Length: 89
Image (cartoon, rainbow, N blue to C red; front, side, top):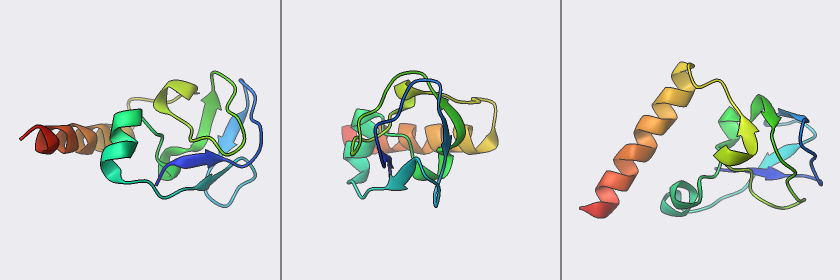
C-alpha cells in the first residue's frame, strides 16, 4: 500500500506515516507499486521529502531521504527484487 499525499507536500517536510497529517494509504497492485517505485505507507514515517508531492499523488522512493541501513528498508527492497524476478519468469 503506497503512501499517498493528503495535501500538497513541500520538499523538506517530514512524513508522519499512517494515521498522521501528511499521508494515507492507497491500494495499488503490487507490480504497479514496484514498477513505479511507490513508497510503502509502513516506511513513510520520519522520512524527509526531497521534492514536492502534489495532493493525491503517490510518494515514491525518489521523493524521500530514507535510512537505507534499517532492516525494514532492506527487507522491502529484497521483496521488491523477488517480485521483479517473479514477473520476469
